[in-house]
Length: 99
Image (cartoon, rainbow, N blue to C red; front, top):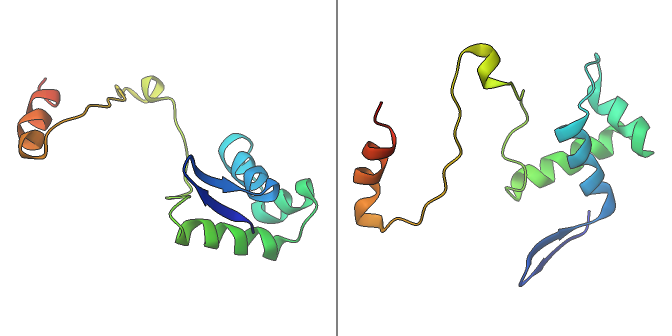
């Protein structure tokens, strides 16, 4: 695993990038999904698991889970980014969360 820190952020090696792409875009629904990912990119299942654990430790991967279409489940989803002074966060949150 090659993780380099630069002024522009973290640079991962090609294998780590491919693992992340497989998890995000084409996670296999099989009894051994990490073996399937390993087979796809030409490494061992153990190497996939080791690299994922290292990426989690470095907080590059927060979690692995399902990604759903909110509207099909009756939810509304909005992504909001804002620069808010620390002393105004509670007030901002209350305003954003109003119905």
